[in-house]
Amino acid sequence: MDGAPHPDTHNFKRRGVLFVLSSPSGAGKSTIARKLLASEPELSLSVSATTRAIRPGEQDGRDYHFVSLDRFREMVSAHEFLEWAHVFDQRYGTPRGPVEDMLAAGKDVLFDIDWQGAQQLHQIAGGDVVRVFILPPSMEELHKRLLNRNTDAIEVIDRRMARASNEISHWDGYDYVLVNDDVEQCYAKVRTILAAERLKRSRQTGLIGFIRKLRTPA
Image (cartoon, rainbow, N blue to C red; front, top):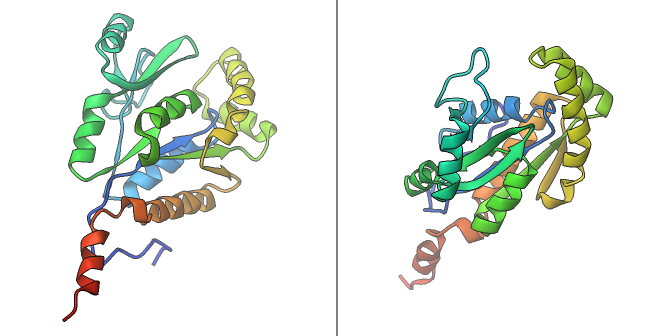
């Protein structure tokens, strides 16, 4: 075994988890999100809409829904987003419809969003939301990771570093805070958090019937 949680053999019905991962750009949340999706069949990714340009290797509908600024504004006006934010001169938002469809199908939903989106989502969905913030081991290491990605110009990296300090200041708005010294260890902790949150009594909607059967005289 790889340390994965054991399955629930009673298979109680439960409410889905809206599982949020946030971090400064370059701290590792996207890598951890990919690993989590590969190992958790009951977890589906909420694909955000964005006005930024598509990058090499990205696919529309898989990584993001790439839309024009006018289309994004139309979606905001029509209340089609659960949350949205303005980041680095671009806009990002979570389409409402796909998330509601995944929850109706009994899926947990993973969100790769920033602190603004996490705050908005928590205001809407409350107890169904679990928020995890991932910190870099140091600002020097974060800068090195951004340089090694080789996807942004130096001036963009400088802006990301300046924004990182502000993002980190919102750490206390999260349920869990982890330091990503080692991606495998950090991923294992994130997976443990997801497993524990799925088992919370408040989410086990099928538990009441089981308890009633236990207490019914033979």
